[in-house]
Length: 422
Length: 112
Image (cartoon, rainbow over all chains, first blue to last red; front, side, top):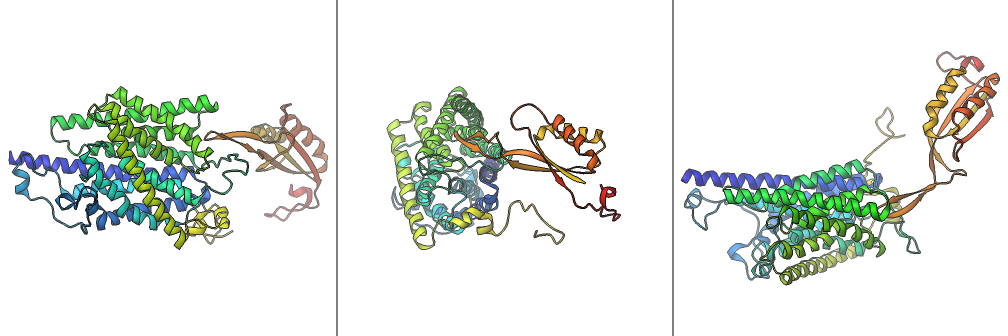
């Protein structure tokens, strides 16, 4: 029996770590998706943002984020978790694990940290796409510090750390709200202060599309995100080592996949009917919308219901992208629509797919997350804007932020015998 | 000597190349170019918004030839590149002052 308990602890820890690694890989998905949907002159900079934000998120979460989000019994109250210092090396004793019973630990503390850490990075990745092609690199990095060290862990505590949203029985399985709506709210605040890319909107309200440079990369990025989402939602079941849990994990995998399929088909259909053409970028956004929509509750619904919830997300995302353009909110990759608008839909849909959920509580959770993240992000962006500025010069924007911010080109076409120049 | 420059529809390049080979043209330089003429641009769609592409992709051929081939080259290109639809392109003929083959140093018609 003791050996079985140890084995099950090892299995659940292993499951946690591997699904965490899958979620880490979503950072690559975001990087490819965003690199594909910006112009080639801004490719190196968006890649720098994507990989650097991941590193910043990891460090900030180790230093203070994890302590804020999961204070355990040390929480001050259900609103304010208090500050609890740097992640240490303590993990569970063998004796505590093999004692078994209700409260016995069934996975390693550090595997929990690892799994939660990659979620913070995902929330921050959502931001980078929306502000692409015009924001200063280091203004973005400063924001990443505040977002991953404080803004995200606070609302994360309210739900997953045992705070007041959790007490109210607000339901958000893997983070349609806590992760995706959070990232999109921060992105919206940033975009409002930043303004649209030069040339995107004409003086008489006309919209000038700025096509992405590399749709193969954007498609690869979407596939990577789709794959990573099995870790995102599947891992959020937190346990796999008995029949009930294993079945639940399988259910989550299937529902997550079906929602993506539903979202994709719906968005492709809507695009074809609305525009007369099947715009690939809308198709990709549709798959991601399906994934975001099901993230709040991938367990209790049937595969068919999950497909429908994803499909509604896919319809919503197309209209949201068109609507934001009408409002002159310039989001090059559609992040605010995919993660924000559809994130909200995901939270609401829980009231449909999970009989134990209450629509009222879902709306309170939705409003709380949006208000908290939007206001704190707006203040943070505003302070950064006042101190160092958030937007590159018009000349740099024209030349491309690759040269202006990073000093490199993603695709240096002309090289002579000396290796550079011409 | 003459330099014949032709702007043609890209999908006609192979036909034109064959037609020129048949009448004994020894070499052609090809460039992908963009521009507009009477055909003007066309509209495309991205994320639900239409936009106009003002410059259409074309292929530019440059053929350096001896004077006696000029009429036959013009005829070959005109025939091979013709679709009868707008946007078939144009042919320009220039006088060529000198030609030199870099490898051997030959000059004039010998170098073509």
